[in-house]
Length: 395
Picture 1 (cartoon, rainbow, N blue to C red):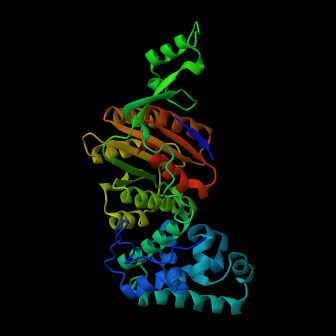
Picture 2 (picture 1 turned 45 degrees about the vertical axis):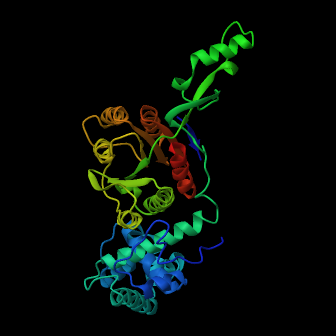
Picture 3 (picture 1 turned 30 degrees about the vertical axis):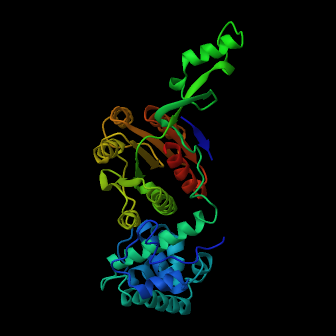
């Protein structure tokens, strides 16, 4: 187990990268897609409205209700919609908006802007007649999410940083190396270590004599991205986790590996078995919403069912910001579920987002039992890098 604490633009996509991670749009027509790729700000903002609405767990917009909440209780409106979504819908910065809400003339102008922006989304079929988000709206949000993350990771070379190259603790023994901090004790080769100590005329085996087996990745790699969608993940956390999921899917599928998704809260809310269908996976990631509590046990059990059998690497990476809360003894039951998954040949890593001390302790135990890695995230900007780093560790 290892613990971590811690622009140049993509200019052109051919039909949204048909060759790399096929992204087939069923409803977003070529004209709209071309607008996005040519950096048409209005179309990009439209997609961001949908993207942010889903992240804030909003399924539909009612102009009058939104306006009334803003005028009557701005603090509550900000909590419900989030500052980014309010900025996109009103065209005003949050501080300016709050400062002027009591002015009648400003209220009149604000209401017009909100109605005009939502009418535009309806005219483009991104919202339905009742203000509900359409499938076309989800597709446009998916495209924006995809391009935003690729704009970030491709110029920085994050899609090509091999942390462990061809070695992996999850594969077959291939060679030997000096033991170092972070290596698994179970990989220490006693006979080789003893021979090294004898050659050096040491009367006992010393730390510098220890040898561990390096391993080559074996067969195909299947990864399931386990995304906590409990209420505390609403907003920036779930938005950042989605982008990291896009980075993982893009990289792994281009490397001929497969990626699955499991979204969990009080129950498993959605899942995708490991697949190389990037477009389908992206659509599912875009739709993820936050709600209620956290059930690790059902998520781990379902993940075990989704992985294929055979001589391959099966790895579950869990992203969470809280302890499991469902069950009579949720922590104990979670440890049992992880042990069962490991017995089935599945390794488990945990990426903890701003966990408290108790949560961090359990997350470390999960990673230890699952023979995976534990990462603690203090800065959300690093999340996609850590998700990719975990992927590189099992290849």
